[in-house]
Image (cartoon, rainbow, N blue to C red; front, side):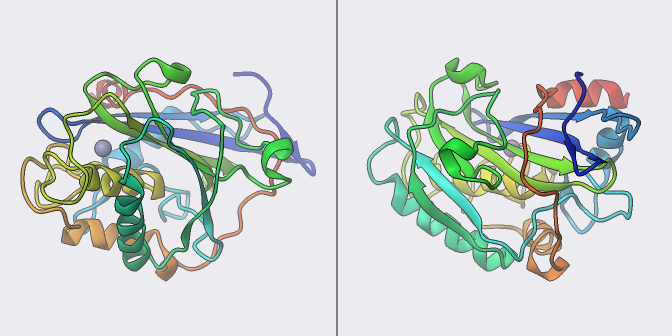
Length: 277
Ligand SMILES: [Zn+2]
């Protein structure tokens, strides 16, 4: 990794977390986790791996800070979304609003669509784009794309992916931006929230759960399950406990001020599991 950005003499660290959900048998996923070293404030992949394996109350989070709390967003600030959906099935925004309502209810966070954008999703997306979005962390890009677009790790069989980006010193990171991308080639999926195996609605809830900080669990009673199979589209008790733990109830967090940072390429979940063994 190259030298990282610096803010007021403080060293910034950065973690990129990516997730791909595959719909064939459920939400088979890939997650990328990569910690970047910043001038002595070393954060290693082992940090991520240890956190990745942690589980409590039926949920898991991508990563934890040194105080044991999940890496999370500042729930006291609105989480702004910009939309690029030229490739989306018409009517999907109704599902988006329903999904955002459920996420707001469960997390207490303010997730809001603020604008349409012509920005395309990309693995190399900048976390800070003052020319496009002003002097703030770039809003979360919610987009529809095809496998191969933007060098995203989106496979033909995937439903979508989520890439939350956290910044800050090692052990004290905060999510500040990210991307949620849906696979426009998955024309076999239905709008609405009919069944977790076949609906875009289930996919939206699952991917936004990843964006907010939740990782997969094995329990098929949860929407964050790796293989949730068939069934009603509603958050399970672990999903709700997780969304509460990373949401408003956890209190405000102040992250680093917005500035250019380098976003590393994520590892896959398979890589993580391989390293765990
Ligand atoms: Zn997933």
